[in-house]
Image (cartoon, rainbow, N blue to C red; front, top):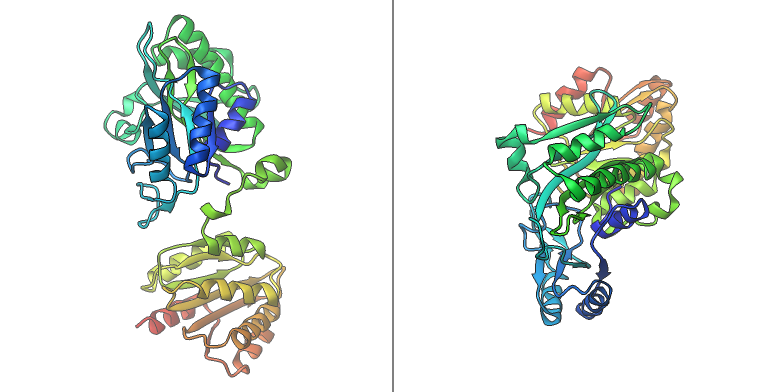
Length: 396
């Protein structure tokens, strides 16, 4: 589950990570009041107005602006709230901005140089360990840094038996070129960031930039946070942060029926049971000349109702030109799936795309009889090769 920046920062604060003072606002009027409150707390004369959407690159898209007066806070908030913000990480049409974060500007002048770093904590799946990835060259162009100067990207692998060690945090601060008070504050920052990552069961904490202010404080100026969905039952407070308006509405609907659905850009809808079978099915569709339009896993206990809802969800995608059902009946009975297909066809009505059905496993023979006697325009296949051939034929 992805979080908004302001939500991620609220978690960071709980674990002692320093973040700039900020208040979220949904109207220009609220933004001005937020700016006044922040000024009373910090004495700041400038504020940053930041669009809150689940996407990076907001600054490049015009979603992050510096306001040098309360009038500018109101003007910029009015401009950003309601805009369809387009960034390298949004769909082509962009994402609608419904709220902004009014944040204290921490780029104030002082005794030492202001510096920006990059830091993230994430799982390295190759070795089965979490790691801290960091760079002394943070900011909006971190992707270019990774591509053009990979020697400026450092990693610190963390043994889960011992957790983050003090010498590792100190090595990070050293590689970032810090010394004195800034060095000490960075060591503390790294330790607190890792505690937030572990304590919230996150799969990603990305801070870009981490800023060393002119008085040697270390701030998390931004926060991109992803929480492991499988651990949300342990964090009901975080689960309540879910923003359904930021998610694909079809995926949200699928989750209501415990269907694992991910929309893709192809033309062949897929309905399978099991992630491994789904991947194999999508490969087969590609080899047959089509492109998968979705990943839809009905699960190991699929019944007629869930199969029907699966069809309804797939058919919401106007790009779907055919549907392939590929079910292996282990726990699930194929005849129940077949009945679900028949019921869905009759209940939905006006299904104008061809449907190819391959059912193998428990009660597969009975399932084929149900499909063949239904009188519906459903193509039945036994072998995987037959299903692939049928996909190729119906797409011609």
